[in-house]
Image (tube, rainbow, N blue to C red):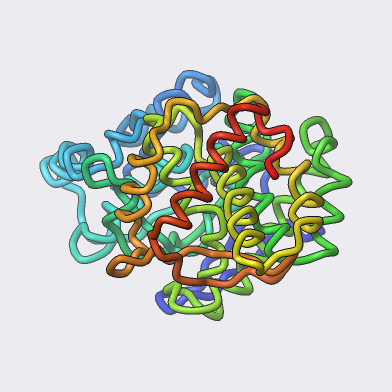
Length: 362
């Protein structure tokens, strides 16, 4: 399998490289005047590898928390860049997960009307998904990813060694995000993920190939629909419901775990709407349930969940725009009216999920 991939963008093409030692690549990348943004946890875990680079380079430590990913969170960072003499020809180099990525990409997109940035993703979720696609997002108050645009990095370096220090929960969060590509892709990729899911936790070769294929599949949609106006919408499968779960649990349920539940919820509603055969949903469900594990939803009030869905950035008027499905590889965007019937179905879902710990929802 190739060690590189090129993604075409309206701004510029950018390369994804798989490397065995990120510190060598990082040292080669840094130029005078560049600023490295580094996740606080990554800095502690990889101090030995990072210290020789950071000793001669300006850097800013990013706390990997949702409040950091907001106007209030990025303001001190922007002020620091301006006051420290950062210039249009300097670059930002992000080393961290999705929050470091969003803070860096959003800032790069607005500093001097745009400066170059590079990305070293350190989480599975970032490596298998968010590192490509150009999206930048920050939160507004309690509402997730409401502000942002499209601004790709100039290069991405992926080192799977970063994943060795992820918690089990964070690793499964990444697997959950990757799962949604394999379900959207269709039958063949669903079967592949079903076979290789367990091995991905222990076999780095299997994991690397799954990550590469996930990015390669996403790349095809990104290059056709970079600004998410048409075909790429299907990648919101599970996300409207998942974002609501994340928000209402104060992010105690991480993104990919919430998306795993969100996909099952989308499948459940698709069955109720007569779009999906119950047996097809039952076939997909064990893999999704394996990923969300013992996650519970008991702390979420249905009314709050409905209100969060209405605030979703894909909502239009009184309708929620969600991705539903007719089967593997047959996801599509559809309006979901917020009426008594829909609310009743969601109530049934939450009730059954808690009673069975997700065993069987009929």
